[in-house]
Length: 330
Ligand SMILES: NC(=O)c1ccc[n+]([C@@H]2O[C@H](COP(=O)([O-])OP(=O)(O)OC[C@H]3O[C@@H](n4cnc5c(N)ncnc54)[C@H](O)[C@@H]3O)[C@@H](O)[C@H]2O)c1
Image (cartoon, rainbow, N blue to C red; front, side, top):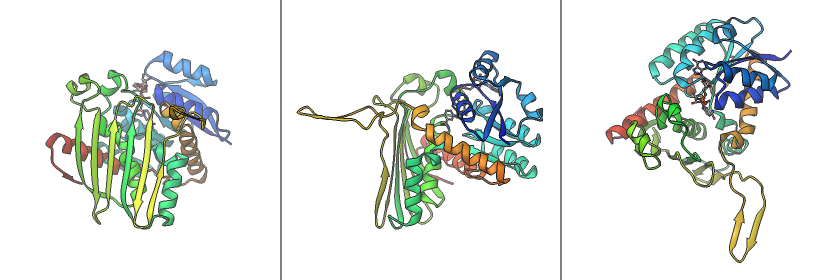
């Protein structure tokens, strides 16, 4: 028996998940829904799936799990609908743009005893997962500072940014979740800086494209995250955890391991371009974790709704701190 999926959203991330599901022997890609019929049809045709409306997916008796990859503003209502329809749910980050609506959504999920996993895919990246495993094993002693560098190769389309909730809720939320994952202790204070240095239009729209955040736990441990919507050299994704006995870090992944050494210096291939390439393995591992949970009836695969809620609170605090110029307690 495979887990039969309905995928909602056939955009950038919907395409990734549809492909990952189609290639997973424990999964069947049954239906695709999208507000744009052509987008749904093209993706369905590519993988031999059927097109359906969101409502039809919720009602379909041959759908076990719903994967939500629609724009962020629709996540909460679609999680609730899928939960009320008795489906297992994997939803892209962020859960919603407001903490209140996450609370409401999690109440519905809890009442229905639904399986809900949130798409913080970086936890499943083999390199970052190994960093976390070594941190938990005690290789670096007590964690003192988590440092995360995360830069996109370029900004997403203006239309996407409009509904995204801003850099802290849309982009940095991944790093905030990763910082929680690495730290193993909740953050209680957030201090953010932000600017529009890449595209003035992003600033005019009330958002930032360049940001730095410092967060601290109750015991004094610190995380530092820097983000940019531009990196001329590819998708810059680095993590470092410093502790009382040492440091563990994961570097960028290059297109090949080939290096050229000459009088001109030392030349490596470019780093992988964006999330499609860099996190291909992470998306596959993430899906396997979700499928294992559905098969086992495990109602609480991580990252769960609580992780989504905590990340949202920190992203909201970062947004407020950037706007007010003051540290914000969480
Ligand atoms: N985890 C990751 O690596 C990752 C990467 C990119 C995006 N995301 C998240 O995924 C979500 C989608 O982002 P994207 O980049 O794929 O956006 P996108 O704009 O490329 O795609 C969204 C798709 O949803 C469709 N759509 C719009 N309203 C809909 C509705 N009510 N029901 C169903 N479909 C609808 C659109 O027509 C579009 O095809 C966002 O929440 C984003 O934060 C996560």
